[in-house]
Image (cartoon, rainbow, N blue to C red; front, top):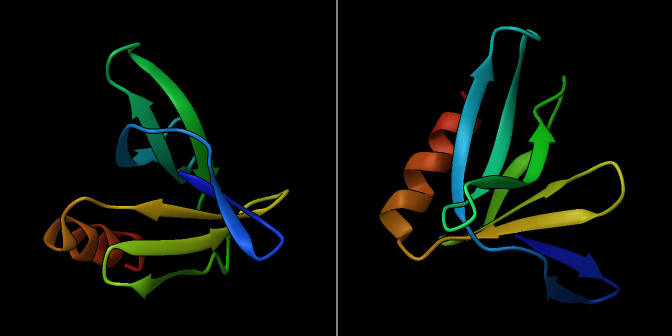
Length: 88
């Protein structure tokens, strides 16, 4: 995950991006999990009218409560699949 700071991006966390449908709270979330620490290091709820887009085939941007954030994928194929799931 990268967070926007002015006109540049700063690295915030690294991990596996998951799209989670949490039926217990009735919402979907993007969660970034640090596999080495087995911990969620970033979470964003997909609220009503949530906007998620690909500024590059591997770089997806969206707004959080406090900043503009981005996910950078190692694989463009994985990025495309994640984009399609989020935009459903």
